[in-house]
Image 1 (cartoon, rainbow, N blue to C red):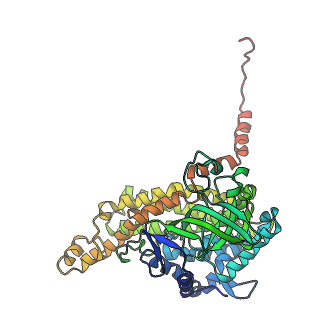
Image 2: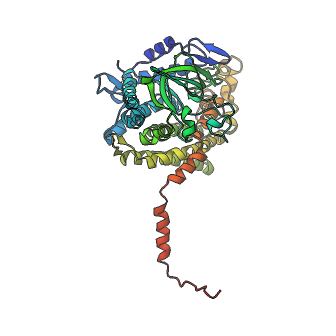
Image 3: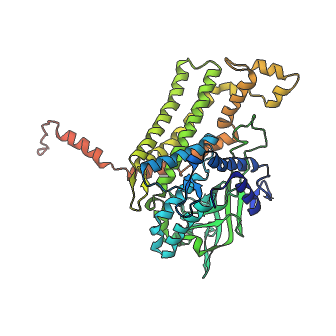
Length: 491
């Protein structure tokens, strides 16, 4: 079938009857439930955008001839890579880059592992074939995916097999002739329950050893699989209108604990079964981490553009845009934006064909960007909060402006240099929702831990960085310095 529309996405989600729990209740229909209906509509808008901008968002499937989503595209040239990135950024602009797990994130992963599938065949050729077939299936059916990577935080000082309750984490229970049985919990499925299927994959940061083999799993199942439960955290969409909460009322993706209650997974949906070595190498050796990072950096460029736009409008609205310290803060965001764009440009224009014939971005540039952005994003948000100052607290609701008695008062009292009070507060509520609401706080926390603990990521980056040329450069420089080495033989 061709790429789906928003209506098809919603209808499929409604009929799936996924096992979702939130606020102490089971959700019968996420398309109408207050905690999910607005983000479901935003997801539907993404799918509709594919047809509104079909020249950028769709391409002809090499398998069926149908029009399928460009974010599944396997690039073979640098121009192909740029085309896919442009589709990624079209989706990102709809939310200002605030939907961190829009479908394109995992579409990139599925593509990479579907093509570079021979790693999975080290255990059994069947697993390689499964990865290839799943890429075709996901592309042709426009499957939306959530995923889960990490075990519950029980005792981080111990390996999983050493935990007091070693079976709390997702693990292999039984191998059968037709598939496997798995049981246990995983974290932290963003968009859990409002997507079609869930990918279970190993962490990109924490490596496993042979004793962790029972936990070393990679597979995919539909979200309505019997025994699969999504336990959602409290919703940050509190049912307010889009004027008062312009972001949280539309883009609250949600995050969920996932519990597998003796879930059956057919063999054709399994990619890794009890092999920690393959799990440890999955993201790097398939180049999945490269293509996923390409999507993330492209998305974060848009996110930074959106944040900068809010800052510039806020500065101008209250006449602070000529002050030196204000301009300096704006410059910080501009520098961050141009730095991210430069990383993206280098990644694309230094791309090379990998051994499977896929045009793969320069990971050095992407790796620097994905390590740097979690460290700088909290500062960018802080700048917006500082510049908004008390204006981020003095923000009445839309109902106040429509009140017969106080409406004219607040409209006058909250006017700005170039706006009436109604328009100015609308802008400031946007800034507040990005910085100080529960939704905005989650965005900051989410970016900080996007790929894992930034300190651990930094350690990995440091260890893998090619340091020798820089050490040699200094040693060669010192060798050319004329010295008279002292003789200490008599000391």
